[in-house]
Length: 346
Image (cartoon, rainbow, N blue to C red; front, side, top):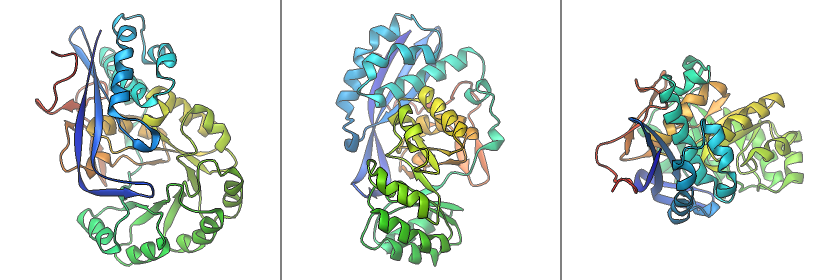
């Protein structure tokens, strides 16, 4: 088994702003595993909010080279368990490796990932299309640029209700809103009353991740379902969110990959919670991986590649009426020709 990886830039169509950061380019790390004519690709993006940089992700992957290449593992789950000690402080790096492991493993099985997991691709929920924080005029223009039946609206400003009221004038599409920890409990409860009247489906992470007392109030009095994001990072967080949120949004990058992500989804379902997987502005490599497990979900946010001005890969094709998977087995995404030279390929 050979491990290689590379850092690439993902240019965005528009400046992407949420409550705590803005960016025009997203750094991403692509991992490649190769053995006996098979290859697997995985991806993780960087994120300054979580302290995950290209440098520390690559350093962590470098430190896992011996573990990966000596071949003492026979499944992605086994590799993930073997790597827990190495990746304990860097789940982003572990996600990219885990994703690549699932890709090459299922290719060797002669199956697409969703086939191996026994899932029906016809059961994939519609992804939302995300509108980042901007002037109201620019947010309206972004909606008109991509006519979509379901939008996620990023909030966390001093005029959040005004934004939703104005956007509602321009579309009948369903809204989801994501405040990225920016509100108080009082705001979330009060805002939920009007948002419910404006065809908003749910609120995502309205309060800070550690404001558990506030979330008890919101969970009890909100007029809308509330979905955890920053409050549900790793497997141990799922049970903590029960009784505080109506559902969880699993980010594979933050959780450490597909392996723990699947466990989180199944645990949430066993607790009667709604399940969602979100993206971190990945290319078509990471987005295609999300699409394979999407039949398990109530909601999905896999619009990352749609937000790019230039993708580095080809993979799943998403439209409001259809999700089309690549013909190849495994996850099936393929890097576009000569866009990157993988570290380790020299």
